[in-house]
Structures are given as structure tokens and as C-alpha cells.
Image (tube, rainbow, N blue to C red; front, side, top):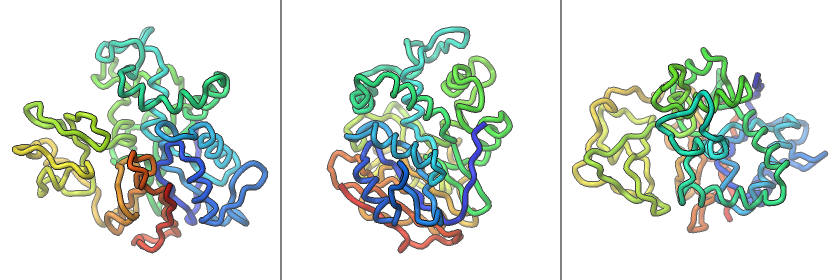
Length: 333
């Protein structure tokens, strides 16, 4: 079973995507020192919580995974799962056997389309000739928790939803190592609940966040010029009072004319201002790191963005329930 312990002197670090040299620079800027094969804070007075997305896009995926795993194994960090680690595991899992998913249909749980292969190519390239090491890293990915929750904060890669956490707790699942992986990865991809025990919704909510399909097959192009029919949603905004543009979280994108928030979305709950601080990545924010709200902190500031002007961001948390914008630390490329 995946068990994690945590303290309140924590450095939350957002999406890395293979930018290992930036990660090393950030850790040194934060005061961490490399010792006995892992970065540690002097006296072990602080620790890191990595918010996921270590693989894909960047130039040094293998080195990034080795660094993160070494810190996790040394007890100087907790590493959470990101959607890219989940996608990696699904990409290499064949859709066959007694849990064959009709909706998926193709040979693997994650389809090998041009775009998906392109996104994963940096990871594959970095492990050419290192088949056994890549297998080890996939085993490491299975041990990454889907979320972390204490009395002081919540953390996950994308969005917090109490029902998602409840469902995973009820299933006794904190990470893929908490059971038979070959069964759990199918349950996590079973969007249509073909076998009556799907884990798709809670894991999708924590790792990818809520989305809404645009009406009438309308679409937009995201920051990587990929055609999208669904938009990510700001899960801390009251959907009953917001326009789709206000609720949508697609940086730099204007929603198509005539699109409105669907009634089933308007009736959903949202993360309120009286909740404990929540930390996450995933959303490709741009510019100088800043708070979304006093208790809502996204730490993905596009270090892997194609423009090359993103930041690898950290928030230095010390238990405060009202977050302080001066506690961001970051490095650029």
C-alpha cells in the first residue's frame, strides 16, 4: 500500500516535463543540497512535494525521473502522479484479455495517434537502449499517489474533488501499486463502466480535471495548435454564476461565439474560499507565478512551453491558511 507522511514546511513544485537542469537550479535556489545521491534540505527541515508530470516534452526525462525518484526514496520528497505518467502507463498497456474495453478498441489503452506519439516521443527517445531502466521507471510510476491530503492542505496534479477522494479511499486505492496493476489500469480507463467497477471518473478528475464538451461540435485550437472540442474548467469558480469564458481555463483562447455553460455543469459544486489551501499543476499558466486566490495555487507555469519563456515554479508553504504571493520561487529556461 502507498503510504505517505508529510510535514508543514513544504516546497510544492509544479510540472517539470523533463527539464532536469531547471529543476536542479530551482532546488539549489531553494537551499537544497545534493548529498548521498539525492537533493536534501539541510537538517531535513523542509521537503518537496512534486505535483506530477515529470515525463514527456523536455530534453532530460530520464534524468528528471532519476532525480525525483532519488529524493522520494531518500525521504526528502513526495512525488504525486500527473496525467502524463498515467498516460505513459496506459500508452504501453495492451487492450486485451478479460477486461478488453470496447470503447477503447485499439491495441493499447491509450491510442497511438500522431499527436499522442509525438508528445511521448521525448520520453521514448531518452530510454533508447535502456529497456530495463524504462521498465523500472514504469514500476516507479505505479507507486505515485493520486493525491495528498492533510489537515493543512490538499495537493493533486489537476483538480480536487471530495467525491473522487472518497471513491478511491473506499476502493482502498491511493496509487496503482495498491492492487493488481493489470486490473487497476483497465478500471482507470473504463470510461463507460463496461465492467461495473470503473475508477475512470475519480482518477480522471484528480489527474486531468473537469472539462466540458462544446455544443454543436464547436471547437478551438489550444496553445499547441491542437484542435479541441472540450475545454478545461476552473473548478474553484462558481459555475452557476459564470459565463463559459469565465469558467473556461484555456490560456490565450477565446471560446467560440454562442457557447454557453451546460445546465449540468452549472449545478456542480466548486472549491470554496473557506477550504484549506490546495496546490496543483497541469494548467499551463503563463507569466510570472501568482496566486489564483488566497487558498488556490497552481504551479504549472509552462516550463515546457514551445515559446521557451515558461517558468518552473515553487510555493514555499509553512502551514499558513492564507497563502502569500511573496512565497513563490521560480527559475526560467
